[in-house]
Length: 116
Image (cartoon, rainbow, N blue to C red; front, side, top):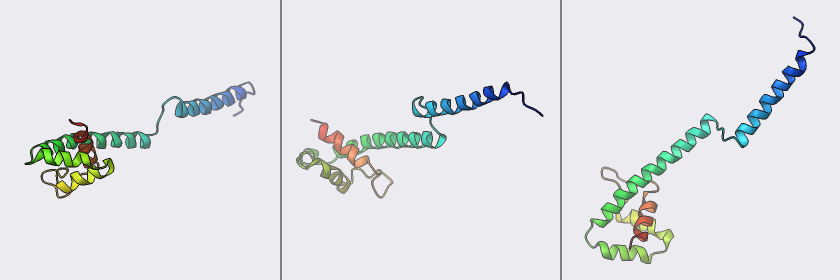
């Protein structure tokens, strides 16, 4: 089968246009691959879990005996040591779990330190 020579420039133009369209779509158009979309969705889901469990941590902290002295001790610490204080106090460990969920102590400490 012979391809008419008038058709070749149109085919090359279509192929070049497809390449340019794909390049522009992925760089400026906001297109993403399935892998990066899944990674972004997983990151968002993990952040939502940390936020929800952070609220439980704050509740556990506020329902302890001597909450005002613990809160004063937390606020006296440097910000990078506050998450460790929360973890060691056991407030970031959720009921039914043996160890704290990653990120919950930092979220909880931030919420408690910001509270007046």
